[in-house]
Every structure is written in structure tokens, then in C-alpha cells.
Length: 115
Image (tube, rainbow, N blue to C red):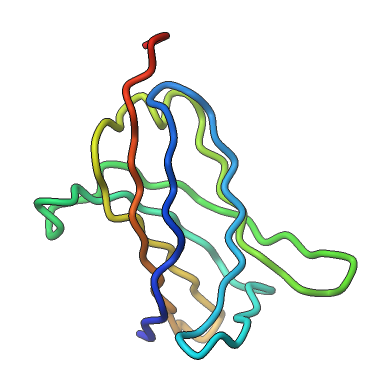
């Protein structure tokens, strides 16, 4: 398992859908290709980080015309309705050889007036 630098802060509203595009890089700023990798997105309670994930979503790999790839995660309104408060989000990139790259960041879910 390889661990890279933290991902950017994500802020969203509980009960609203959100598309998250993540351009991945190492802790020295070198781009990580997501091409050919399986992407899983997790949200863990910030306080109880060792608990089971509150949310697990399969991501996809998207490729720009320049050939660079990135991870896309689409959270539905039903997914984000489960979230309120501060979380650690984690993106696992798995290749066909079983090597898993782990990237983490902070996710804050605000209360929505519509929820």
C-alpha cells in the first residue's frame, strides 16, 4: 500500500448530489495516472477514524484530451443525505497487480435547508 499527499478539502450539503473530480499527485507533486485502476471512495467519521466507512462509492477514471487521467466520484443525494459534519475521505486506487494507492482528505457536510 502506498500513501500519498492529502487531497483537497471537499465541502458539500447533505442531501444534494455532488460530482467530485480529483487530479491525483504524489507528495512531491508528480501526477499519478488513474488509467486502468479501480477507484473506491470512502468517508470515515472524523472522530472515530477506525470505524467502518459511513459511505462507500465506486469511482470512475476519466481521461482528458491531453491524455491525463483523473478520478471522478459521483455522490447521489441519497449518498450525501447520510453525511453531516466532518469526515476523512479516502480514495483507494487499485491496479491489476493488487497494488493499492491510498489518498486522504477532509470532507465537510453542511446541513441543507432542503433536508
